[in-house]
Length: 256
Image (cartoon, rainbow, N blue to C red; front, top):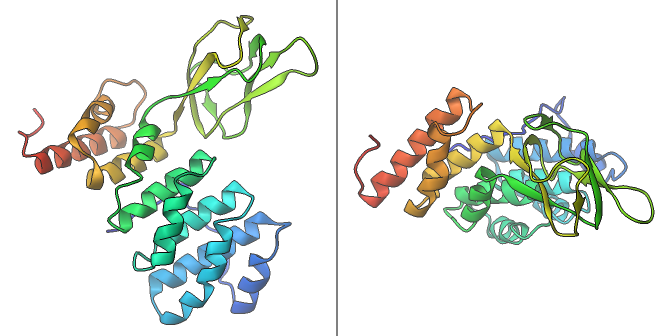
């Protein structure tokens, strides 16, 4: 089963074994580590037993302090669904604090025939709330419907002491809606805004649920068939295909 990950990037030239060793140890340049991991993924896809010699480095990358490296490692581990070490590590990454890591782990687990990442895929389909980290007055700098990038400050809260505390997007997507008005006073833990994942990630989640979704997921999936505005045709088509696959497995009638 081919599984195309939404964030794939061309990292450049083919690396030699010596390059791989150097790049994997270059903690000052995380893109080099990602480049090396991408090359290992390519070698897995081409086959050949020698690539397994790089598996300890992939497992080490899954423990790296940088979330972008852990996320890339999760992607790589999905390329060999015969590795028990990879399977066990992916299950641990479902508890990672970073959404991007959890989501790639959930997608990779499908290659192992493991549906335990299903809740994470469903979470991609729901808007994520951002809550106030402190008491104070909220100020927004991003309008509703605007695209956001993971980690970017979409607003801030000015507390009674110190510098304003930024409100950061947990992942790339768009600002779905504001839960309070600009200038409102909020309490710590209050919902202040909602962010929805971007289209490529939603598409990947729908593709994953095509294989492991169950009947109770249909309410979340069906909204992408036409209820939500600004969804492109590819999303609507995949939502329909995924819903039909789930209905077929459950023995239900086709989508009207």
